[in-house]
Image 1 (cartoon, rainbow, N blue to C red):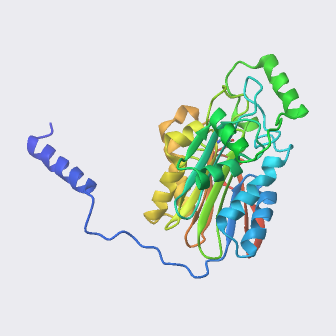
Image 2: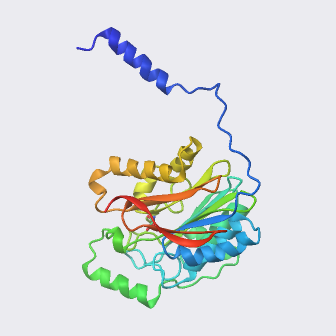
Length: 324
Ligand code: ASP
């Protein structure tokens, strides 16, 4: 039997472990004079997007401008059926888009479930720059976009309409498995001045419930940037990214000294531990950069790739993963 004395000792030890050492100065990161620019983005369509972003970074442009330019490539590409124009619709046949941006000053902007606008990332940036708010949703986001001069467009291509009609034949109103049903572009960059920014943009899970919003436009879930520490972005089943506060957590783990890969791994493992029964059906993947220009990614499931571009050239890496 645990004696009262032993119990008190254990409790005291536990409490001591939790005590926040207020007298210890926060870890400071070396200011970088020339960290070397780098852009990192999710999936293989990140290659083309990075190329565009790199043009900005190579010319000593701002990381925010780089990521905003880069993600517009898949947003406008009808062959990328998970982002922007040509994105697969929700179960009611409506293309609803989610996007957010975050800059080196900690400013953020987001639009959720916006329809008819090909570049939701550009609207998210204007929410950040022109309003006192962070998030606009649905009709309000569309209204704002139109007021800012954006054109209303039909984003449903004949191909994505046909895919939706095929799904309707068997669709049981559950989002389908991630393997045929994903891919957000999350892009993070560090510029030649050592500043970080990021952008995330998606049409979300195909055939989702109308009004469903995933992690991608949620600051701290799909994207987080802290210019003192690093940046992270996510892809996969957004519900699980949100439940572990994915990217905010990764940045905090990097602040505590973990490398980008270690931090991504730790957060993926939280998903695996909390939701073991879901691992076989979902994907959750993260990429991260730290202030020193180190980068990496980690995924719950095999198959995730991320694209990178820096002064040494460009490439696509197969991510390490937890399960096949
Ligand atoms: N994370 C996105 C969402 O849940 C989807 C994806 O990245 O595949 O909406």
